[in-house]
Length: 314
Image (tube, rainbow, N blue to C red; front, side, top):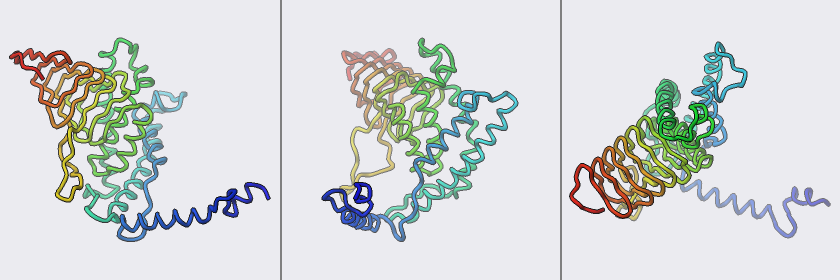
């Protein structure tokens, strides 16, 4: 008998695959009984969410990611044709996430009073705002990087723009209480670009990530307008709070606040709920766990405050 036919009967050499499958089934059942109140609910589809995001990006920038022969008078019809099925699919994925949350044991995971249809409509209504924010990010990238020869090049080629485009979509969903789908979008962008932005992070206009590989931005980070980050920057948590039972606390501010017009250079690590004041510059490889006044220049060797020059170091 061939190896394929033997495997179909439940054996691969000396391995009893039927027995392995039975043990895995028992482990799944035990895990699911701990997590869910009733029957095991269906899950959102990672593959479908990724397809939805691709369609949304095409609708936001149809000349770049739509059909190559798209004529000017066909752009609006293309956007409508693209958004209609994408938003319907998104609504279905939101329905699955909300149903999953209702079946989960323990503290409720439903963060939104909206129904799936309401959430999808709210999301769609904010897409023009996303495009406006992304256009401001593009201008910041073009003005801030001498290697950028055109806006089109940034849209097609820059990983920082690819990451922030998907973050702005994910952040909309996160704000609507659809955290799992938002996280799927964020993690797909992370795997594609090397840039890890939690969908909860709040980011102002004219945001530019140069190079980008290794950038990490935590869930409760707040970033103002006209901020520039370089590769391997971390905006992370300094420590994790825990309850009396030892379980980690969630949903509390634990990541940095970066005010307007700040530049953070490669490899810098900023930890905890600290504030980087407006107009500051954080040098490469700096480790920072304190507030920084506006107008500061922080390097490994010294700290100089242009506005508060008292000779103090950090």
